[in-house]
Image 1 (cartoon, rainbow, N blue to C red):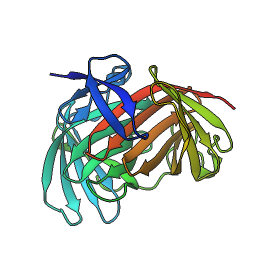
Image 2: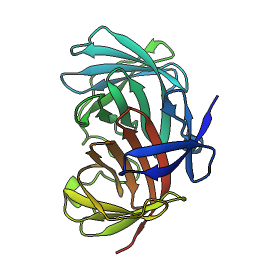
Image 3: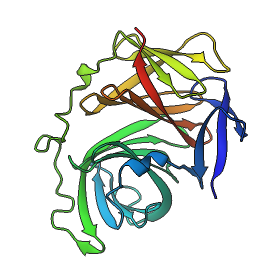
Image 4: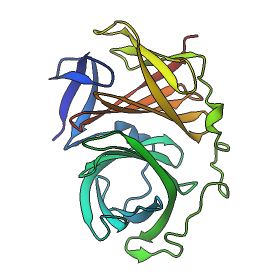
Length: 272
């Protein structure tokens, strides 16, 4: 059964200092150890009853999406080769054929950006200890309802495939540098000033914790035209934020130091 959480007070963003039940404010459903993404209703996650291989070079994993909420993770290559772990997951649609898939396993909190059109995956991982990091590589179909598919593991880097809504831009084309954008989550909103291609400052402009701006170093991963994954971390946790400048939406996966991940969704508008 899902419980209702409200995010009402912050020490720093993304450190969520107080989680109170049923008191209004910006809220999200949380089930098991993972967030529940109601946005999934806008698109059907295509991988259920399928096995997909994520090839990160030295690390290769098969993801068996057994149901709409359970995935078995099998290490094919790397230190954990031969081991399998089954976890709960949620899938949040970002664009057509593109999903943010989130779960928590023994290695920490994971946000997979799975592009079924380009057959490519970006993995953003926050381990229990240490710095968050990113991996990327080919993402290929291995089986459907138990029937093997030819070409499993034979994926290639992007280039041969082009997503339906245009080519993927270079990271240098991140449009927000030198601009200020407001991420409005309803009960509270933040202004994000992208001062350079690597540094940003953010400040709460509506809500209970308005105060001076804080600075962070960020990295950008281009996903589709006008859609970028922007990530940063501080002593309290890490943020993977999907900023869709074309559609004016923002989705933030905030992982705290205790490993819990919360999804916030809202609007994204330019302030200056």
